[in-house]
Image (tube, rainbow, N blue to C red; front, side, top):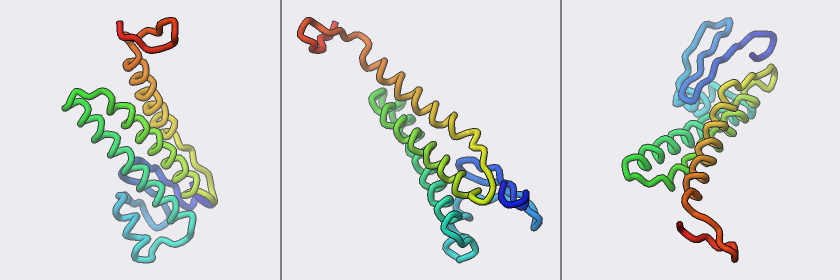
Length: 144
């Protein structure tokens, strides 16, 4: 919500739904970037919010592509990299929400879920990599 309930948004990774006195809009990510390039969107907070939103979306898409590649090639070591992209994308989404509604408030409901999923992927990959290994007396890893 921005201002005195003047603009209300619902934002997802690839689009934003906006209600305002001027009407309702479905704003896809590339339209938001075009609004900035054409000078229709101004203000540091709006521009940074769009840049963070775009960066977060790109990071999530890269993470998804890495997961697909890991499943195709059977390389589970790539999941940890995808987890880092997912967590970083979630952080960028959080900053985007805070910047976009600087004059109002934001409740980033999905951001904790994105970060949690990334953390869970990272943790599960770490546990899976260490399964089947034990430490000997000199604290070196020895395969069982």
